[in-house]
Image: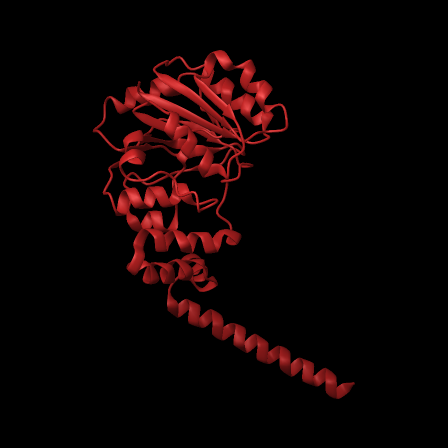
Length: 274
């Protein structure tokens, strides 16, 4: 079997319906479909039962988080590749899987195939043709648009369940940095990513987890990487990136100082008059 599609869900019946429909209608059929539900209290189980003829395995029980649920799916999977399509995400078209494997069959082998990300709000994110460690330190790729060899999980590691939001990012970093896995960029669009999902963005509130991720991947080399990551989060970096070199930046801050001096003089004049 070429592919295992794994969908995790918690109380997102409408999103699950859209995801299931996009999978079941595929023209390509050399895949299995696994749905892991976290004991939902909405209509999710009814949706699963409605589509049970197109679902090879499903379960509805409590879990400890999204990566615990994803790992459950991996343990049940039999496919050569895994594709994680969370509830709300959906395959680009009915011919998506056929198009993907047509392309894979005509390119060099890889451990992880990834494609660009299209979001439900219509925005489009393009990934580089060649992934580098530096790129993955500052960005991740979408697991909803990645076909991952199942053997990588079995031989290296499953998703780190201690992380709540960035474990797939950590997995990709480890595969590239520690295991030298081969990543290959596909032209075929795989899925449309639900912007309302739990993994839709890595916001500042997840900063501590991201720092922990760097320690897990790079160990004794993590400190300079974290320092560089913090620099890229700084206002200074944003100004340099958007407005030019350090000479311009120096001029910019000098101008601000002059403005503050002028404002302070104006305040003093008004105080004297009052």
